[in-house]
Structure formats: C-alpha cells, structure tokens
Image (spheres, rainbow over the protein chains, first blue to last red):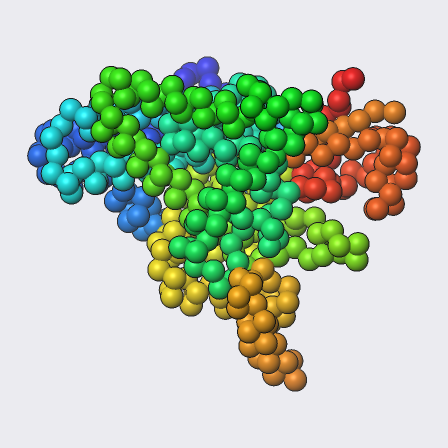
Length: 392
Length: 54
C-alpha cells in the first residue's frame, strides 16, 4: 500500500475510490448468511442478503444521503484510465462465480425447512441481480476482456440476452413507446415485468438475427451472442446438475429468475413516463438528460457502480462507472433505487409518489409523456384541464 | 472516405454519405463533424465511435 498513488488532479482526489470494492464484497453476503446459520441454527440468517437489500440499504441511503460532487474535467482522463477501477470491477467476477457454486452446494447438501430454503434462494437471487448490474457495466466497455466477462456474469442467472438487447436495443429505443424496457405512465410493475422480459428476449434474438444476416450467416451461427451466453448457462447448470442433482438446478434457476426481476424493477424506475418527442420527419429526438430518472444517494450509487447517474450514462454509454457525473436539473427520484424498488412493488404508492412528478415534469402537458395506451386519452384529458386551469 | 461505427449500437457513420438530415453534407470527414454531434440512433457521444478498418 505504501507505493499506491492517489489519482490527483491539482488537489482533487476521488472520495469514493476505496468504496468501490464494496460492490464485490457485498456478493459475499449470501455466504455470510450460511455461516451464520451453521453457527446459530437461526433460519433468519439465510435471509441476510435479502434483508440488507430491502431494509438496510434504503435506511442507509436515508441516513447518509446524497453526493452531488463531480470529478473536475481536468481529472477525467486520469480517472478513466486508472486501472485500479478496472480491477475493482473485475474482482466481482470470481467472487460471484465462487459464491454461486457455493450456494448451490449449500442448498443441495442441507436439509432446510421451507422458510430457510426461501431465504437462501432469495439471498442468492440478490447476488444474481447485482451480477446483472456488474455485467451491465462490463458490457458497455469496449475491450474484449470486459465484454467476455459481461457474458460470463449473466450466464449463471440465464440472462445473456441482456448483453445484446441492452446496448443495441434499449439504448436506441429508450424512452419511446417501442421500448419494452422503458415503463409507461399508468403501468404498474406487474404489467411492466412480463412485457419487458418478453419484449427484451424477442428484441435480443432479432438484433443478432439481423446482424448475422448482414454478414451472410445463419442465426444459428456460433457467433450469435445469444447462443454463446445460453451455451455458458447450459455448461454451468449442467455442472451443478451432475455434481449436486436436478433440485440444485431448480434452485439456481429460481434464484436467477428472481435476480432478473431485480434488474427489471430497476429498469422500471429508470425511465417511468418519460418520452422522447418525434421530429417532423417522424424520427425520435436524441435521448437527452431529461429522459432518465436519477438519484445521488451514495450507498446505492456505490453498490450499483453509479448506475443511478443514469442521464450521463445514456448520454455517454461507454463512460466507465467512476467517471459518471451528476447533472443539474434532471428528473430525480425521491430516494435511491434501493428504496424505490420497494415503492415500485406497491403500485398505489408508486403512482401516488411518481405520477405527480411525471405530470410536473411535463408541466401538465401529458401528450409529451410515455403513457400506457389503454389510459392515454383519459390521462391527457385529465391533466390538460388542470394545466389550463393552472396557467389561466 | 472512411466509416465510423458506434461502439454502443453499431450505427455506422459513412463519410461519403454524411448525415444530411442534420446538415452534415455528404463527404464530410469525421474530423469535421461537430464535436457535440452524437449517434442518431442511441445518442452516444462522438468519442464512442471507432474507425472501421476495411
């Protein structure tokens, strides 16, 4: 450590520098839960990771609060090229894969009551969800190492389509009615989730089909990224099945599905009701900072590698996590993503909290919002009255 | 004339064709495309493009 140099530019140094490895360390929580169970016999310890995500992190966001600080422009180049950040992210890969195999082994070799088993499954699922977020960061990088690791991180949870559809689907269609991964005003999470998953799988398949056709290859060619990631999943699940039995495969599959739902509930938060406008020629305006919901809550930002600085992410998708910036005047959520997940699970609460924010953002002109088609006309009529009253 | 590919979404900027929809005339070299211009498909910045070799 004595030889370590801080990335300084003038007198600026990155205050989050030594916090980023927490993103890898938190993947050990499910294991900590099993150790606690061995020591105490209390099933609640197997819920450890789940409880941290849903209770401790939202509370910590509330207590510790926000961080609006940005690195100065003069520090950006050295911050972006500092390999420390790259390795801090890479560290999460062996930790996740090791944890995943360990959890499969633990589940298969312990006779657990159902409530203990459920806690074990959800805790592994939290790990799978966090791994998708890490794969998201890796999948936006341009080097082949990162891109391979992105596919690998998605494989245990059978979420490889995300690698294809996120960059070449969501980033193109974001905040339009055509995007399955952008939620609509009036659409609750339970409507959004199946629409998003089905639409995303379909889009991922079509994107690769089109690319391979352009290259004169069949969609079944081995270079199809969807097939590559599915193959990785088959290998990993076969290892688990042969080693630990089919119940263990079922266990990791359920955990993976729950992990996927965590990614999609975050998708639900990120663009709710926001819409890019169409230009005269029928194309959409470019994605701009006001087309994403942001948060600066520090704890969730560290654990999700600045994912909540979402406006900058869409403006500069290959910008690495440590350099993402807070923008002034962009749509902001009342709390961090971790707390907002809980709100999204309770649709009446979500609508009550978020709908006024979407309406205010559009100054009552809901023609500019992305609205669930079945209620679109009613919503526009309802708020146009209040908008005209307000301006009269 | 060269081509530049968006690293995020695979959109290709062809110098020979330009992007007349936004006033970038056919034949505009990549260096002459305004710095603030971004990918018409996904909005990624000009820095997120790479030169296609062939």
